Image 1 (tube, rainbow, N blue to C red):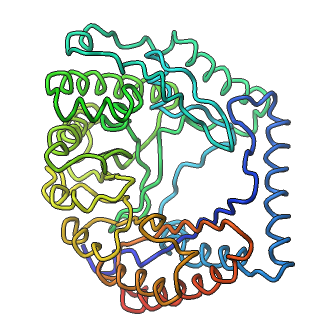
Image 2 (image 1 turned 60 degrees about the horizontal axis):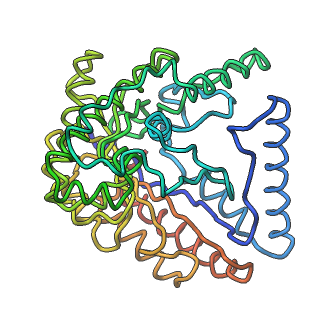
Image 3 (image 1 turned 120 degrees about the vertical axis):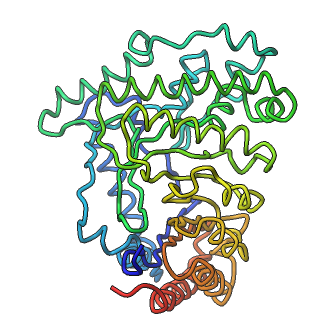
Amino acid sequence: MKQDEHNPVTARIVPQYTWRPGDGPNRLTWRSAQEWKKQCETMRIDREKHEAELESAGSHVPDMVRDINDRFGEPPRVKQGRKRLPVSGTWPGWYEARDMIAIALGAPEPRWMNGMLWHERDHYPLAGVESAEEIRRLSIPDWPRLEIVKRMLASRERWQRECPDEPASGFGQGLSLTVPGRGPVWGVFYPSFVDLGVYLMGMTRFLTVLAGETELATAAMDLCFKLSTSYMEFLLSVYPERFEALGAFGGDTTAMLSPTLYKPFSAAWDVHLFEYARAKYNLPADIPCNLHSCGASSHLYGPWGEHPYRQNIGTMQTRLIPGHVGRLRKALPDAQLELTIAVPEFDIARVRPDEVHEIVWTSARDAGFRDVHFTVFADVHRPDMLPALERNLLALVEAVEQARREGPKY
């Protein structure tokens, strides 16, 4: 890879004003396309009104967030349109694949509350399964015949009828990734075992099975593989996606695994998925993949560096752990590091500006001043926290600018 093919240091701010109501429209219960658009417009106006109120009170945070995201939010080559990525339509969408698979096996539908879908944690469909034989007796759903799937397809078809000039998007099975040397690529994401297992068994039961019931865990992984691949193939048959990347290695729950459990139940899944997809779609040996782990995962940096398909990991998405980015870069020297800065590891709204500068600049330095992106969640619980956040955003800008001066030149 040539030096000028690296991506520069980038950063994006996600402000969360927690004293504001945030229900928003529920995409699963829209009654008409016109009504849905009206609700979205109302939400946009409400957001702009809130930002105007902050600005009239003397806060520059809304303008600063927009400026930072415009200047540093993505690599220049993405803004220049080096590659044309699929454009999603405006269909409100539906439950994600993990929800749909869990519902198919008997889980209740999530509830919409406070702007989010919430799962019923007392009714996991496989929580009571005690043997591998019980798992093996389960059949894979006939996806087109399921009521929940019929409702999803009907929702999408209704949008097409009401908005013939606004083609509906797919079913959330695709996502853009930024890969060093390639820029933005479009990937198709299969639900992973470590995520499906939690949706089907619940966190406590699933991790207990992985840790001490090997035969049951292996049977569950086989079942989840069939569920994941069959459902995604069904979606791709309804809405074909042209993709250049494959996911997802790891998963949201990867951080909960020990290194001992990671290898047989996460890395082994990645290998199986990679080989399955390569054979099914005749994919090239160097197709980039993403590796994902939502939480603090420094205990897995060693296993990630030994991943059987490490050379294919083009994008790494995980939580930033202050002081450990150098270890992560050593484990994945050629990957784009997409690092989330958030509580409890770091609260940008409650620290000093010099601490913000230190964590951003030092982390960029340890990543080699290239191929690293920071997503910073700014939790603002009271209006009187805004002045401190302004100072900290200025410190972040200075750190990113300094890091860019040290990194690849464009």
